[in-house]
Each structure stands twice: as structure tokens, then as C-alpha cells.
Length: 169
Image 1 (tube, helix red, strand yellow):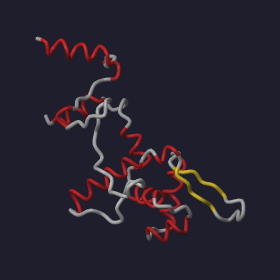
Image 2: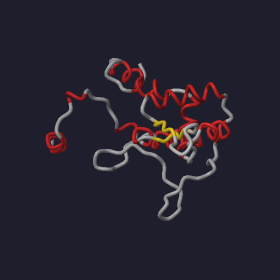
Image 3: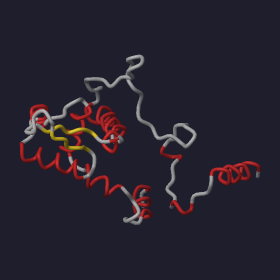
Image 4: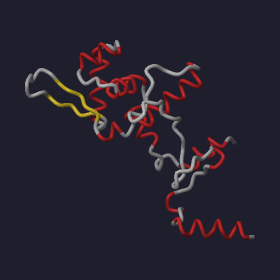
């Protein structure tokens, strides 16, 4: 049995939040709308022009993103016919996911870096790769990861003591 299959079997379905996330974001147009929103697009017509998406699909996806709290819908006071779609805190929290998917696509799909390039605003240099880090900030490889049920987690002090005891043997 592969490591992934073992993990999926161990997660027991109901305790894993991945299906909930996929319910909100699990299709192409939602990610494309989110990308446009991160790039400053806010109005229905702008999304449609930017993405070349059919009006009914765009309307459906925007409604779904609003329903899931990823975007907020605001009727503009100066023109009640205009609506502004704004990323919420929940939507902004998807930025690392978007960056990780883009970097994965650059490496395994396109084979070349995308344009435009996302840069650090301080020194205007490209951002680094998205990595998995430990609680103390050190990067972790796939081989250093394991799944545990939350109830089985030990407080950090106990975990360090256990590691020190094993190292001393």
C-alpha cells in the first residue's frame, strides 16, 4: 500500500478538512477568479473580460465564493447597479495555496517561470518557493512528515524530552 493510501485510510474521512476546502474551491474557474481578484479585479465585467468566462458560469462561481466567505459582495453606494467583489480574510488566506499551485505548474507543467513574477515589495526580488516548515521554522522534506490524530499529540516539552531520551540511548 502506498504511503498516500495509508494516509488517506488513516484520516477516516470525516476528520479531514480537505473535502470542505474542495467544496469551496475545487474547480478551475474558482481559482482563476481568485487569481484575478489577487491581481486587483473587483467587478463582474472586469472578471468576464479578464477571464473570457461565460456570464452564467462567472455568476455561479462568484456566488459560490461569496457563499463560502472567500469573497464579499458589496453594492456600490455611488451606483447601486455596480457591485464590487472583494477578497475576505478567508480569501486572502488562500494566497499560499495559489502560489504553491502556480509554482507546481511552473515546474511540472509549463517548465518555465510564469509572467508576471510575484516579488517581495521591499527589494523587488522574486519570492522563494513555498515550503512546509516545522513549528520552529525549519524546512521539512516529505520523508520527515507523518500524520497523527490531534488527540495523540504531545505538548512540545514532552516531545522534546522523548527525542532527547531516544538520542541518549
